[in-house]
Amino acid sequence: MNTLPTTPKDPPPPGAHGEGLLLRLTGPLQSWGTHSHFNERDTAAFPTLSGVLGLLACALGRPRHAPTDDLARLSLTVRVDRPGVVLRDLHTVGGGLPPKATVSTAEGKKRGGDTTTLLSHRTYLADAAFTCAVTGRPGNDADTRLITECAQALRLPRWPLYLGRRSCPPEGPLLLGQSAEPLRHLVDLPVAAHPPRTADTSGRSDRAPHMTVFLSDRPLGELPPPQGHTHHGPDTGAHPTSTINDLPSKPDGTRRTYRSRPLYRRTLPLPPTQFHGLGTTQLTALTTYMSEHLTPPNPWSPEQ
Image (cartoon, rainbow, N blue to C red; front, top):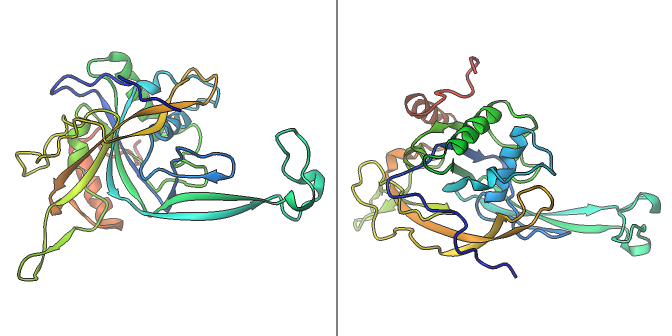
């Protein structure tokens, strides 16, 4: 059984944030497995640390056996814009093929009789959207250089990028920009969802702040308050609420194994003006924010 590491990552000092990337992870389907085994392929309800680090390694052109110990030192904070819906797909493998073309067994033999067809269940998140901050350690020059290198690789990736599984391409733009205040922008960036509605005592539907979920591998007490708010509320995110099995335990590339890490969860009331719906309306708001606050101002422009 995996055990919870006592200090998987050193928390930053109060008021300090490392250089970071802002990513937009959305598409028709995405899948972030945590317990996938043989024919059962699951997904977490949000992007995992191992999955996002794999995306960065793919952009950098690192082969499967290459070390990722430098990437494993980065931190991931996720904002849940749209949780999506869970979709479970059924795959069949090996059916109707001659014996020599069927799936091999663990012993290297070929299956015969009624065992030639294998059933595989694949789980996905459909129509989900997440905004993520990948951050380095405060004041660490090596992490800052790595963040810059990852930003350049995401603008021109070595290999095609995917959202957890190769059958899940992202919907652009994926890289929103690079910043010295990534958590500030993670809170303030336009949300890819329709404005929330609530009904008051008279039954009139009105716009109201929406409690948005943030998840991280570090305490979330350093999240700045949303625009127009002077306090966060009672939820501080200072203590882990659960664990997740997505922390690479052998980042030297010798073997793919993972161990549990703390999962911190926090909700913040984001103003309704921050929600810009879907499609071109949301992309226009996103482009405006990026051009005013992030570097590069427009990562998908022809000049880039």
